[in-house]
Image 1 (cartoon, rainbow, N blue to C red):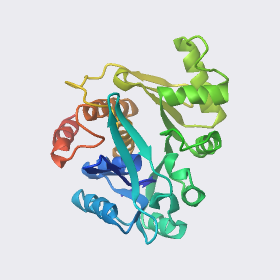
Image 2: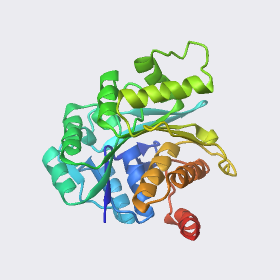
Image 3: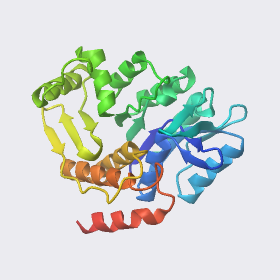
Length: 308
């Protein structure tokens, strides 16, 4: 059975009183594990209290720990979450264990599975050690390369984005990230008059061509998503059942990516995969935080998708 390899940060969101395990790659792997899809999270944590919290989550949700590395010096990744009148402010700390993922250990973990896809983003590329390890993994596998851009302020540069796009087969971005790509590579800037639908499609097609992508997926929040294929296929999903209420959108993109990757493993039709990814991402907006605390959250989805 094939495995989805998820590369990058596992960290703790510190709410100054409560610690919640997170990081986009961890969230994706956690969702896949909840749907009983083989997954391998390649990450690195410290020998500290937060590392123990991360390990406990791996155990609680039966996630494979074959790619979980332990750093005797660096601390487990941590994001300080500060609450204010405008919501939350996230402070991503520098020099964390996930910045130093060991290439030999990572390659050993990769060799132990038959990888169908490798998921990666940009945060774990901010330091040379983990960035070089990522590209060693990509060079060692012919699995589909899925890039969830996940641009975090102050944690990336355009050069990283450029190389990531060239390395990817499928790229997922949100609207804000798409504007950055337009500015860098299509010379269309947010300050200019808004593009009409045909102009947006043409610009996205240019991005697909420039970077030799299989597909570019643009998520639109509650408005759904648009899939731009290399063959010119465009799939628009806007008729998504809205969640009964929205608490926050944290983790919605991770939920979308997890179900998109799950659909490829399960052999779902592309339109079905996109529709389910949109619906599941919307449901995550109706819970606090990026991932549900209980596996019971997934029962309804497992039953529903099995019956269709």
